[in-house]
Length: 379
Image (cartoon, rainbow, N blue to C red; front, side, top):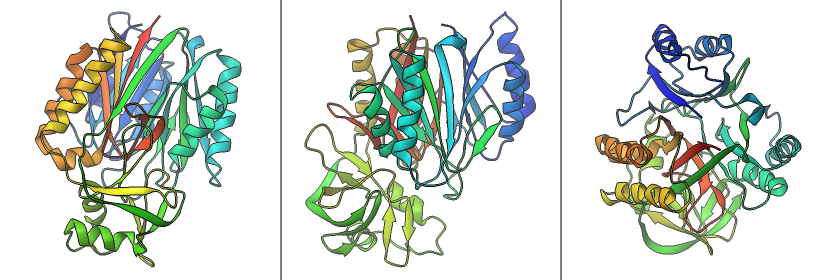
């Protein structure tokens, strides 16, 4: 399998680099397209569609194809996978039947491929990625390879989108299913944030809507112990502050804890929505913002993936939480460079609103403040 990555700040620039990438006879069939809302993603999609290229697309909070991060651009990974080896499914949610829809998608993929694996994109903060993962597991089994992320919106915290050829929606799931007997994918989700303080109990929650922790509104508890200031409906940076500072860590009996920062506040009762389920009665701790060693942990986790599961890769896709670049700033480039150097394969990545993957020693889950790295290798 051959792959190339391209990027650009306009539709015309993407047109130019796309033509250049194909000038040597390269004929991509699949594009992993990470595109800012400020770009004309429909025009870029049309360019790809006219070339007969299937599109797996998400809007972003930032994009990259190497260690240089961009904002307001398009980053695209092009691959020449045999069209018989993959299929893209798209479903717009009218009601929150996330698990049922995922089961239907997995059943269709299972009929098409004996051993399917999945790359998933989500749009809208209420879309429950864990339920989608559970639906896929219901059909494909607990050890299925499934990874992905939540679309971004340039930190507007309003509308984000997933898209494919001729389809685009703000509340949807996009699923690239591959025949794992022909195309292998392996991934790892790594956080590195350190827990702080005592273990606390979630005393009221429904799905990914957390109301109270230790019988105190979760927003109030976060503000008090995080020392956060000016957390009000009128502060446009409120959600960024919650996501990047003092997020919740959901404790697990098996595997590493998973991050659950607040992504959308209900000011009527000072509750908030997280990207994944937080069961009532579960145990949580708060987290300190990351320091320098979290980058090393991510790179070492990817190096371990190479050493133990995927010695070579043809292409790499990265979903890195938007909160990580807010916390790490320019140091984020070092992490991305370290990841790219592991396989030195063509890469495309985005800063996402959530990450889907298997944490070290754990199950498939929806994460935040995490980097999820996915490697592709043709057989």
